[in-house]
Structure formats: C-alpha cells, structure tokens
Image (tube, rainbow, N blue to C red; front, side, top):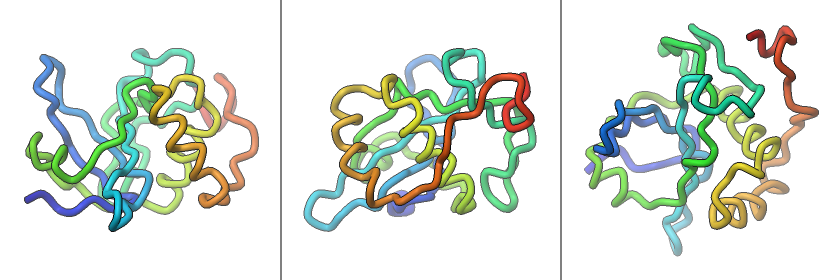
Length: 148
C-alpha cells in the first residue's frame, strides 16, 4: 500500500494514459467515515493557459524538492478519490509539501473554481470556510508573483 493520503502529501502518479506521470497534491485529509480527498495535479504552464498563477522553475514544493519547469495546477483534472486510487496507480509518495505550497494550491482552487469538474467543485466549496485562507486576489500574468 502507498503512504496513506493526508493533506499536503505529494505523490507522483502515472495514470497510464499515454502522458508522463504528474505530481499530485492532496488538499484535504480523508475523513474516517468517507475516505474521499481532493487532489490536484501540476502540469506544464502551457497546458492550462487560463490559470495565471505560475509556479516557477525551482519553486520549492517541498523543502527538498523543487519544480523542474514552470507549472500550473491542472484544475480541470482535479479529482475526488480514495486511497485505493493511489494504490491502483502505484503512486509514489514524494514528500510533504510546505505549508505555503498547500495554501497556494488551495487558493488556486478558490480562485479558479470555474475550471473544476462539478463534483469536485461541490466538494471543495464545502471546505472553503474550513481552510480559512487569506488568498487575496489571484496573481496576474506579468506580476512579480507570476512572471511569464
């Protein structure tokens, strides 16, 4: 069994869909009763041009792990899954992301929720108040937070 999913865990998952494996961030702790969690994947920034929050090359997703290319969260691929999904895809536990990385990923879900699949959006919006984030407005392309 793969390392049990918890909020902030980062996994490398190969969906075996002809694309390279992607890094996925778990955004919610799976409750005991319903072990469902939200996970979002990072992708090359050009694969989701409508998202302005670009995670730059070298960004420290985890203390010892930096991104190898400018990336964005591929929110239209966000999933509601359980541990069995990670096990089925033989996910590789990479690291526990930094608090800032988890906050930023959750803010992306709030800023760009229109891109989420409807089922994921309904589940996520019920978490917004619990996350209690100070997200402010989303970054804009060309600003210091998200240079192009």
